[in-house]
Picture (tube, rainbow, N blue to C red):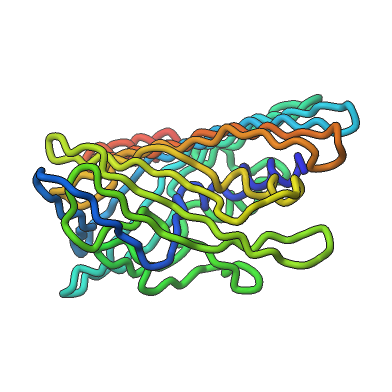
Length: 304
């Protein structure tokens, strides 16, 4: 189990950089408010290049049969969206890629493994797939102004057509006041020890907490609705139960910052004395387009 979680953290940093969210139609409960209402929409321009710095830190402590192992990982990457077209309704088509990555992984009793795509010509064992994914289009996505994926073409589709989720947070259809909450139900397929699949219902909720200086602060929470009594299933869901905040710039129509966290412990997933403690923090910050260009030039100079 420790190995599985470590691989998920180190090998799937591209998913972390995409910030997967629910994909079902929004349920929008009415929220009484006398305050002003705000229209939240994603906005794009043809030829635009958007960059975010994404940092993902995780610590997994696993105890099985009296032996405790710890895995610490940290990944910092630059996520890039290159807009190729914008439709009259505001839907944008863009190429999603990762420009650079700096990864560290430390397992109990082992030397730390480090890979920096800007300086390392040859990646360490286990990081080859990551290295091949740097600087190439990973997917071409058409996104509507509410954050719903209209179309997605992935360079390497997941086996079995596994759902990849949304690439950014969904927004409410109507103009909403501070205090308004909208939610997205969706299902997760969780494999069981018997070789079957259990469908687990979850709910993501989004609350507009504040609007200040043109920036909306949105609180995000994820709740597992299906009762789970088997720790072996519960341990597979720990990474899904993130909470945090997203800062959305209303004028430019983009996420400028977000932070999501998970801190959860599961006992008995592999025998009565087993336990797993999973702690992670995901942050994302928008890079100003001029600054992003300067940083890219500096990185190219460093590589030479």
